[in-house]
Length: 507
Image 1 (spheres, rainbow, N blue to C red):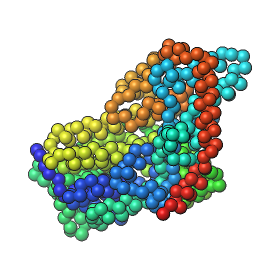
Image 2 (image 1 turned 30 degrees about the horizontal axis):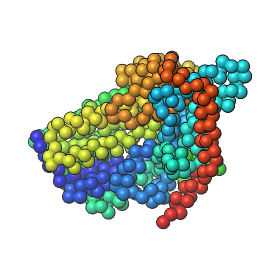
Image 3 (image 1 turned 45 degrees about the vertical axis):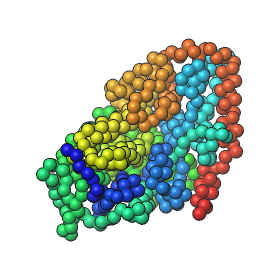
Image 4 (image 1 turned 180 degrees about the horizontal axis):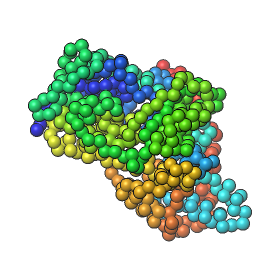
């Protein structure tokens, strides 16, 4: 069946709803875009961390960076600091920067492992290993994070990296709403009390509590965990990932900013039965504790959150309950689900907005390139989104599975679980040959996988013989010079807070 879509109705505001509305209003100027949202329906508005793809979305829809940061109390994000994941007392950074070549004789990680192995066998190994430093010290944004500094990427200066943002999600939706309305989108305040169906099983209209009927050709379900259209009305089944990712609760609470420097990274600290986040905003600091209710009770988890906050709470902690996974299909008949209405992956690597963006991008490609939409386009859309979820799922599982912790039942279970075949194959290839295998629809590049492997001290059993083609003294000298060059460049950069002040002063 082929259908044209000229009346597009977005159910729900918040981040996903207004991202969709803004993309549709700017990319399909002839379509009539209507957003139905109710002030009585809350949003999951905790502090948000993102990764670099959001900047591409902002460029496409015309979002000015300084305006966005001002409106959302935003800060810059270079990546994530992982604390206590390998073992208590350990930490490492996963940042959006280059670690050099990941393949071939000159692969940085290969030369690093070779130099590390050689140094550890020599007399005075401690001193030699100290001079070599951690692999993260070879990565510019990781060192920038360690020193709370920031600059714009500039490959000509050697500053070749990507960045993203932290922001207040409760402020991001209203910011996008204003832009979407300026581009012609219409907002209707109202609560849906009934969904009228079409003869073919699709959605014909939404009936609001005041009796109004909102008809449309295409409905975008951004109704959050309720999944009112795709889940409740069309009955699309849910694919549950909780056997791999058992965390199913999160306490969230903002806190006053302390006097410490404004960090350009998210902090994820492993706890007894999950992990806590720390997200620095200009106005406050966001804290949360993501945990498995099978391994810890809610009140104990709440107490652990409060114990890890470094400023006075700005309210009572709020409990969120969720199941990790996604709907079997995302586009069914004339309904497309985005955001929490389509699925949820726990926030360890900030993939929620990325997955919304991937859904919007594929939808816009279909609508812009096709006068009519058939089942083949929907099948392609659904298959692609499933792969995006699976790739992100695997990357998140990797963090848990490589842990060396055995100090609680949660960590023992995570270390011993059977991982999905797609991840098992990747890990096997890395362990046996040092190759960073990639599938299609990957969210995270090889350098990201390398950062986790290195941070969790998970190295291949054998190294590529080509690494030996580089003389050992030349390899050690190159690593030392690169480390020094990174440190020298970072020493010239402004602090994160100073750089942010300069950006926000622009008009």
